[in-house]
Length: 430
Image 1 (cartoon, rainbow, N blue to C red):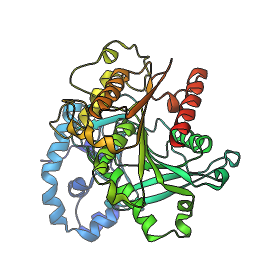
Image 2 (image 1 turned 135 degrees about the vertical axis):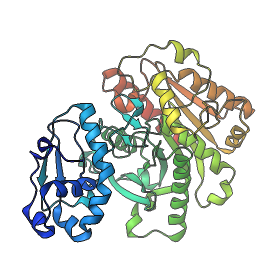
Image 3 (image 1 turned 180 degrees about the vertical axis):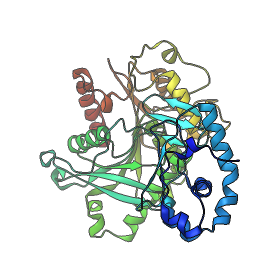
């Protein structure tokens, strides 16, 4: 099949290749087809090739034979789209081994606007809607922050927040904190969490480990729970092996006062990690789990609650019923529905809740305007009923919605955030 001169008109073909193999430009164009990085979606597309690497690694015959199918497909695509031809630019510094071919028929299958896009081939895009920051903090805050690696293989790490001064020389409680984001977005390096947790460490006078766990859908649940358990095991191992200069902050921690904490999906993770370790509390020594702090914990269920149906949400709300459904589809094991115990811990009054009776205290922080309000209240009531005693206490924050403490800068939200921090300080100081 001869090539149209129009197709060849814009191609800049290096003379060295034609001279080396004594072939005409049309045949050389055929041989380059398998190595085109991105073939023509619009007239401004530029295709980059590196003839030197191709010449050195492949014979003309190999390239010629392997090009026929790709060429036919490309020409068919061109005629169907009726787009103009782009130019091939020769870049001697380009390394084709580092450039991935972009798929031509990628289909969007799930999206939460501005936060995440998931495609049919498994590709995931997360726009950087929230800035990532380093561990640096203002000196006047009185908190030292740094990052530590928990597991290099799975890339789990944590950001530490350590108050510079001890209160009356006493060692401090430790909060192992899990950020929110529907299990699918978020990071310990997001500026909103960095600022909130630094303030919490300073005012509540506690050490905080903010865990950067694996995200769904690339790593569906229970990956985040596994990362939480692994973080506790890592902490215990460091305590048992003895403090060294790399882990100086351990000298400031009271290991009989460890709390699992988190907001939204992070609250869910704290709950499920607590269930996992409660049956093995004796194996955690010398560290002791003293309680959990669940801030607007992200739970769900197949049947809508009243607050999920009727709580009015602003257009840019941090969580809506629709976005919650999408998060669960992406996070739960394939085929599971929202009555899975990881999502709905009170479905059939899960027997796993009984294990939480061994935890001295559970604090649940609920937002009045949050669609999760009723689920959070039901969680507290069910846990107290299953435990045959009041093991859960909760506090309702008036006039604010989901994730107000990290995403809302209004005066009302700031006042409620101060109340939240004060309540946490009282809870961990008992």
